[in-house]
Image (cartoon, rainbow, N blue to C red):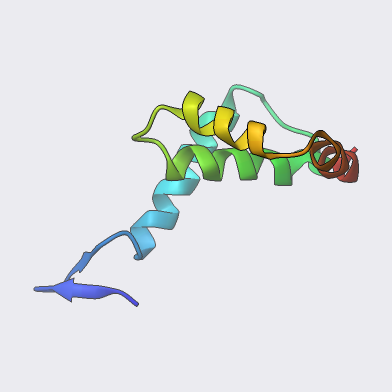
Amino acid sequence: MVTKDKGVPQGRDHINGIEGFWSYAKNWLYMYRGIPQKFVHLYLAELSYRFNHREQDLFPLLHKALRQTDNAEIKRLLGRSA
């Protein structure tokens, strides 16, 4: 639900959020000059995470996530797209 104050959307749940994400994604992916279709979901998942945590230092967040994830689960997830 979008709340408005004098006609201006308030909070992060409005259309500008998705437009901001796609702008961020296009700029980030441009350097690759194309990505394999079978890996698009992985690139978008990474970009979504980076976009949602763009004001934080990612190293501690990723380190914590990797410590809490079993290696077999990581291999299973990556194997699905290979």
